[in-house]
Length: 272
Image: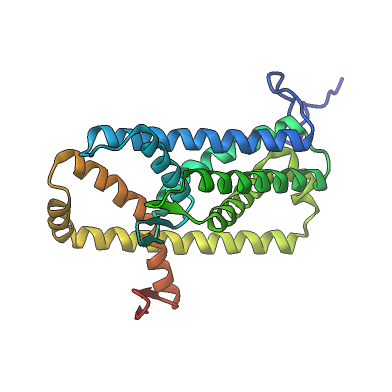
């Protein structure tokens, strides 16, 4: 007479039939390769659009491809050297491009590998991150020239850190891993993590609000600088996109100012 309702499926979802099952090293390697290739293609299309529509000289397609590779590493906050000048402060906003692509590829790797133990999840994440770091180093080696280059060690280390952050976030957000990983943590640990994340989110929101208010207050000065640097409409558009990419960086500066450490300007001046 009494029948139990359907069991919850978010912990053990039905495997997707269109995803072929692979061993953990193969799935992680394919996912890292796909993530690097897809994000690199996206950056290449963006750079090609800038090169076609903005004012450019006699650059060849191969030079544009090398510049796209350097820009791809730049989206992962790898310092880029142009001639004798090194640009170390990269726009944090463009980090969302490789991070989003890597997240989707990592979720595919988890569905393909179908790990069953906590060790299998972390093994997938570490193999994924290691292979991605090697790919970043390879791109740095192949794309660097005398006039435009990135350091191999920087490319590998940044790729490893980003790969670890994205893969660990994917493992934590992946439904089956919640039973294996989260349910084993004590209530006090979970509560502490939630409080810490909420506090950081609140500080990030306040810093973003202060940055927005500062932009509104100083809008006339910003517009004057833009008119001087990019008088054309197309140039202004691309400069605006670059500025948007730097907004998260400015927000983190505001956050550092709010919590006390402040920021260094030019290595000498300190705002705190």
